[in-house]
Structures are given as C-alpha cells and as structure tokens.
Length: 111
Length: 112
Image 1 (cartoon, each protein chain N blue to C red):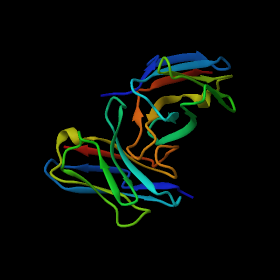
Image 2: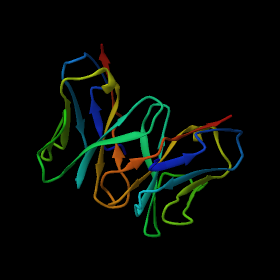
Image 3: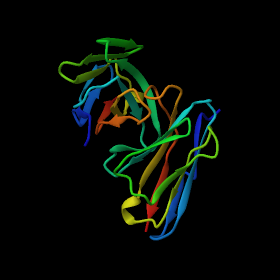
Image 4: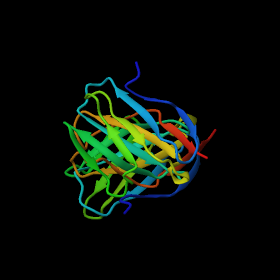
C-alpha cells in the first residue's frame, strides 16, 4: 500500500512567495527524503531528514519531521520560476528495499 | 559526466514482445534500484540490488527480471509485454542502502 500522501496535490503561488508542502506516512521510518521532478526528467534529491531529527535546512529549503504524527513538511522560501516542478516525499526503512514515494505535489510558480 | 544513465530514453513496442532497458552508474555505488512511474506520476519500487542480493517487490510480475552483470549495471528485462506495462521506468543508485538516491533520466516505455 502507498506510504506517503502529499498535500496539497497542486499548488500555485506568485514568485517570491513561500511554498509549503506536507507529507504523511503510515509506518515507522529510518529517514524521509524529498525529491524534485521537472517535467519529463528524472528525480533530483533535495534533502534527507533522519527519524531522530526534527528540522533540517538546505539553502532555501526547510524540512520538518514529526514522527509522532508521522508527517513532514517542506518549505521553499522566496520561490523562483525555476522551482516549478513536482515534489515528492519518500520514506526509507533504512534497508536496501527502496524508497516508498507519495503521490507528489505539483508546484507552479507564477512569474 | 552522467552519474546514472539509461538506454533507451524512449521505447515503443508491441504487445507480446520482449525488451530490455539498460542502466549504468559511474558513482561506485553498491545499491541499485528500478522504479516504475505510472501515468498518474505515482512511483513504485520494483527491485533493489545490493551486494548480489536481489530484493523484489512482491507486486512485480515475474515477467520482469533484473540482471546485474557487474556492480555498475542493473538492466531490466521484460518478457511478453502488456499494455499495462506502459510507463516511465527509472533506474537509481545509492552509496548507502536506504539513503540519498541518484536517479537516471528515465525510459518511457509505450506498449501498443
């Protein structure tokens, strides 16, 4: 069964605004990762947060993790047109059995 | 320098045919994966291969078989293709199993 659920499914904002995407999952995890996918392209890893971490930053990205609620959020600050893409959360149990992805949030940045 | 490459990028074939998709990574990673992305953009793990150990997602039909000639390659072979196999297939690799993964550009398979 599907692990992650992103919310919202689609988000359209003006350039310069902040974008927040949420992800919920069902089982225990070792880490949670966020990926970006531009149209017709492969996935690009953005950030990884481990189950014992609560918040992590990378450039304009801020990720939070609440293991008690089994949820995570991705905040992109000062959005740019180039941030237009689909964003996926993915959970890992820490082994070699691959990532379990959510359905993704399609983010559109209006210039 | 392409970290994870796949060939071909596009593959159009008829039902019943057998086809292969190749994947190569030049990152020196020990673990490689195959994912399927359907028309609704939902990604699902198909296989992972780590130190000669193959982990198969139980929902994958046995018409799909991964083959790893060496640590840098994990090819995907599909027998008796069906319409429902149409999707984008992504290869990925990771240095540490379960951590950050590097994805290839994808192979769009269309079965007619």
